[in-house]
Length: 227
Ligand code: SF4
Image 1: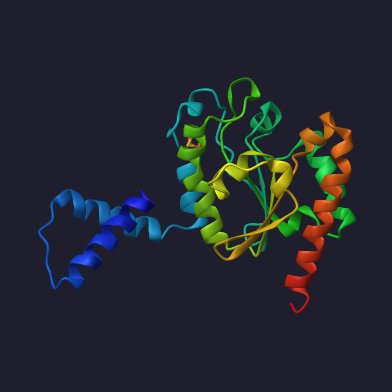
Image 2 (image 1 turned 90 degrees about the vertical axis):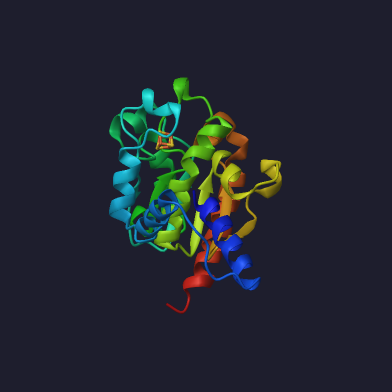
């Protein structure tokens, strides 16, 4: 929807440059722009309401409830994970159980806690059998993550696993090549690293996630040293 508005605006700007100051429009267009103005006034609470009632892709049929997020809604740091597993779906919170405990320890080691973050999923509903989300499911859901970022304006984002990459990097990448690197997205910087579930299955990758956390800590200290 946002892309459509951008295209219409660009077209109107183009007409204006040609000296055309008025265009006839249908009532439907007026309604659309009223919707845009509604969305541009959106708050965290109204967005949350939209997410919790969303049926924009097939995953709504099997989830218990979409998972909005957790942690500090005014945080300057954001933690983005993949998609809810059975346990997260049951507790209606991201990063519970062993995964949450592992991450809390990793954050403590770099002197951060859950309260420093707003935590959310890339795709807000669980998938059948825990399979990775399909491209169309990511496409349908990414508007919520992007809006969360727009409203929160985090300075620094830590993204876990392969799913967030599909939202932020449009070209195909090899994860092991981009993990631990810093990418700019709007006003934020993002570091990608492995999801703890990958580490549990591949213990040799523990050293890599450790390195990425050290990189994240260094960036955090550089950004916040004067605040
Ligand atoms: S995954 Fe996202 S787009 Fe699909 S139903 Fe859930 S909240 Fe809506």
